[in-house]
Length: 130
Image 1 (cartoon, rainbow, N blue to C red):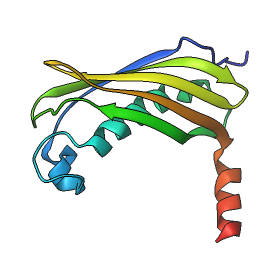
Image 2: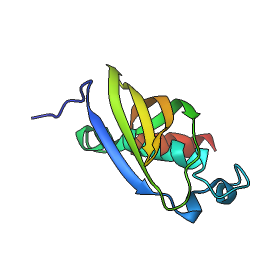
Image 3: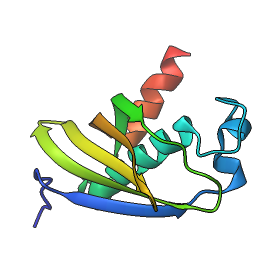
């Protein structure tokens, strides 16, 4: 039986902010707080991993768009959780709403779109374009 990707799929991932997750390390800022690029990476990972086991063999999802707001700083050592909800399935296009929070409250929100692609075909096409 083929697994189906349906609206409403949820996923939550929790991490502890480490020094390598900070704005100072990413180069996106100058201080030791959770970097916006790290938050966006966590958001993308939460969304893509929510459907990974439901994809056809050899398929992955790729980001095509993310619209994120980083609302509050989080220090090293604090836990950050991220929740994605699949809100729309339109053929191979998947749309998610995502929220992130630390131990003190909400730190970020996003809308995010991903496309389902065959990984080998995608890489082969990319190699031909180089």
